[in-house]
Amino acid sequence: MSRFIVPLGFILAAGIATGIYVLLPTIGPVGEQMFKGGPLVAALILLIILQTAFIIERIWSLKKAQGRGPLPDFLIGVRKRLHTGDVAGAIEMCSQQRGSAANVIRAGLQRYQDLRTEGATKEKIVAETQAAIQEANGLEVPLLERNLIALSTIASIATMVGLLGTVIGMIRSFAALGHTGSVDAQQLAIGISEALVNTAGGLIAAISGIVAYNVFVTRVDNFNYMMDEASYEAVQLLAASTTEKKF
Image 1 (cartoon, rainbow, N blue to C red):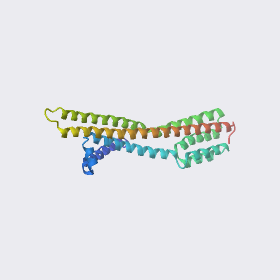
Image 2: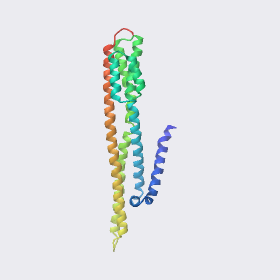
Image 3: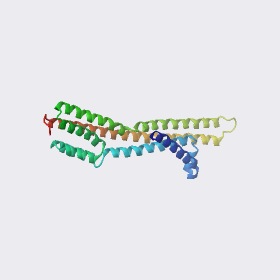
């Protein structure tokens, strides 16, 4: 069922974009001017709708990945518990926080606890704890980076669609100028209007998409850095406190 979500979403967005384009002349002078941009305006509206949907999804996903409460406070709390050897308390904090960083750290702590209970050697405990953290991190990072490529792609496509509309409008304008006798002023104005509307629409979609992409990439990079730093420090603290004895 999930494989149909994206096609259905695209069809819904296309229907909404077409409806908005048809209703543009009823909005007022601005809507009439946009309507004169031709059918490619509907394509630009579709791209903007998809872009807005991806931006909202990324904001929601990154907020969810941060978990409950400020992430720095959570990492400080886990660090304090590990300094005192309270691994169970650190795992409980991770369970309550429910963010991506908490999931990664909890995977390592739970594996550490299991190996200590089994009486594994220090080298095995450290190696498998690191492996558990890396595996969990490998599962969380793609969720943080999901749909970023889509935002970048939409920005590129919007630029090309706007440029195509500009070229079509200029072709219409030069065709009006090429008539023998008097210049067809109406067709000339329509062509220029179509070119400018598509140029503006393409630039708006491209600029907003590039800005959103860069903002999200920066947030994801900062988040990954914090996760890596916290995971590394957790492993070092666990390695320092590990002995050959059981609990």
